[in-house]
Image 1 (tube, chains in turn orange, yellow):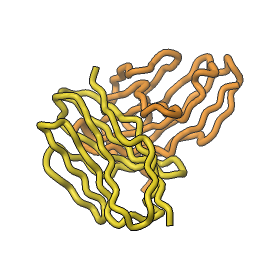
Image 2 (image 1 turned 45 degrees about the horizontal axis):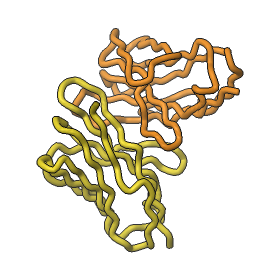
Image 3 (image 1 turned 90 degrees about the horizontal axis):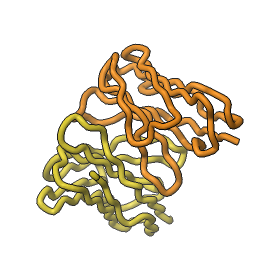
Amino acid sequence: NAGVTQTPKFQVLKTGQSMTLQCAQDMNHNSMYWYRQDPGMGLRLIYYSASEGTTDKGEVPNGYNVSRLNKREFSLRLESAAPSQTSVYFCASRPGWDTEAFFGQGTRLTVV
Amino acid sequence: KNEVEQSPQNLTAQEGEFITINCSYSVGISALHWLQQHPGGGIVSLFMLSSGKKKHGRLIATINIQEKHSSLHITASHPRDSAVYICAARYSGNTPLVFGKGTRLSVIA
């Protein structure tokens, strides 16, 4: 009964380092999403994948890349981390457009 | 730009009080979601509605399409209800959810 699993839960990076946030869901959902959450702001969409094999930019895609590896997995990559990317990142999935969303536990990323 | 506005930003209540959190949105939504973010950070979906009212335990969600407004009510509030409550809208077409900034609720015993 795992749902949406994100790794890692916490990460500290130095400016310029790269890393990949992993997300996997075991509910056979078509759509997957990456959000960031910053104090005083709502969840902002970084990238999403409406179905396996497709990815689209969201509201704040700059500095990020994504890969929909298969139906289960959707990864988010920071090629050259910047302090402005310090945030809490959430992965989510949904079966379809008119369905509820299921969220991972979040990754707290600090870039120093 | 499609936006979602929530009020209040912060809310403190005494245990047992009736609580209302408001959400307003632009025209043309196909569904409105209410979510809860626990103090530990996890986010869970509470309701998805496109008309009328839904109820689950002490939680009630309503939506008024004409007024472009939704409310989340909590009856007989309890300290365990303390969380951030988030409203999100799906606008027409195959578009991702647009989120409000959340309402931080603290219920004091």
